[in-house]
Image (cartoon, rainbow, N blue to C red):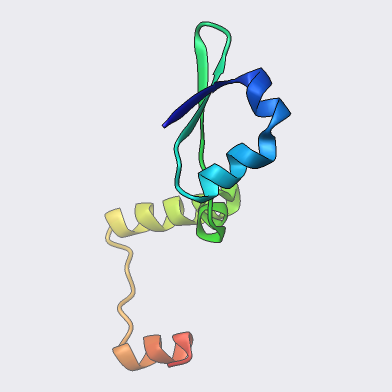
Amino acid sequence: MLVISSREFRENQKMYLDLVDQKEQVIVQRGKNKAYILTSISNEDRFLADPEVKARIMHSLEQAEKGNLITLPKEDINKLLGI
């Protein structure tokens, strides 16, 4: 784990982002009371961070909790997935 100043990060961004890509944990200290962890994200993370996707998932969970479910035969699921 590396703890660096915000100034050090600004001056050497590429190096620290490369380290994060190599699974090194980098913490950027900003002043006395603020710190940030640098984390890489994947395409899946970006998908789940989309507010529209999150809203659709939450809506589906609410429907499931209310028992509003549709059961599909495995063959139909495979067709939807192109299997």
